[in-house]
View 1 (cartoon, one colour):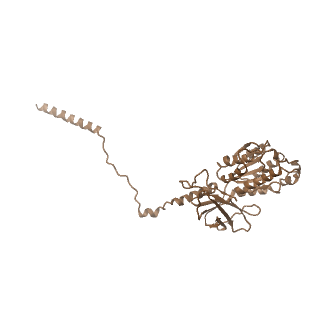
View 2 (cartoon, one colour):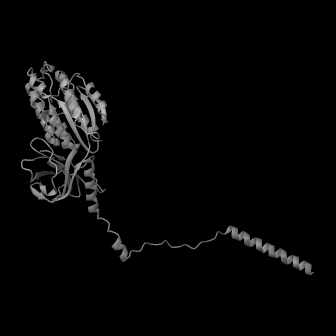
Length: 387
C-alpha cells in the first residue's frame, strides 16, 4: 500500500511538472516596456550649443554658397548676388578692391552690401567657329586666332570647340587637353549656308545650361545669318540672358575685298595670306550682323572685338581670360521685393580707381520662389542682364 501511494505521488508530480513546462513554452514571456529616454534641455545646453539658424538665414546662406560655386546670379528671400569684373581702360582686371569700394543701386535706391568675395576660379569656354562660305578666305586667320585664345588659358580651364555653317558640328567636348583642342580647331573647314542663330540657340539651350561654374562663348564670325529655321535675331539675343554666360564675339568683316594687309599684320601674318574676302548678301545684312553681335555682348555682359580694327588681339584675348578667371562676387538684401515678373534695374559703381570700367549684368527679373530654401521655381534662377 505504501509503495502504491509513493508511485502515485511520483506520477502526479511528473504530470504536474510536464503541464507547467508546456504552458511555459506556449505563453511567451512578457517583458515590461521601458519608456524611451528623452533629451532634456538644460541651461548648460543653451550655453554650449549655438541656436539653429532661422529659415531666412539658412536660405540666404544657401543662395550665397550657390552663387560662389557656379557664378549664377540668384535671387532668394530678397538676397541678390552677382559676379562683377572691374577693368582698367586697357581691359586689364583690377585686383585688390574691397567691399567699401563698391556701391550698388537697385531702381535708383542705394543698397547695403552684405556679401562680398574676390576669388580666382577656372572656367569653361565654348569656341564657336563660323565655317560658312562668307568666311572661306579668312578661315586660316580664324584658326590662328582660336589657337591664340586657347594658348592664353591655364591648365584647369576647359574649352569646347563647335563649328557651324548650315549645320552645327561639335569638334571637341569640354576638355583641358590643348592638343585635342588644336586638332579640333583645324578640323573646322568651310561648308554651305550660315545658320548662326540656330547655332547660338543650340549652344545656349543644350550645351551651356549643363555647364557649372564660370562660362563664356568666344564667337568667330561676321554675324550674317542666311539659313536659320528654328531661331532668330530676337529669340537668341533674349536667350543669352538665361544661361549666365558671357559672349565675346570676334567680328570679321567678310564683305570687303582687298585691304588685307592691315588685318594680316594684326596677327603677325604676311599680307598675302588673304587674297580675297568673300561677299555677303548686302550692306544691310552686314550692318544687321554687326548689330546682332553687339547685342549678344551687351545682353550677356561681355564685349565685342573687331578683328579688322584690332592691332593686338592676343592682348585682348589675355584680358578676356583674366576677366573670366578673376571676378568679384557681390550680394545684398533688396530693400523692396517685387512681384514675379518684375524687372529690377541694378547699377554697380566703384569709387576707385578713376575711370574704371565695371562689367556686370544690370537687370534681373523677379521669379517665384520654391518651397525649398536656396532654390527658385522654374528651370533656372533669376538672371541679371545688360541694358
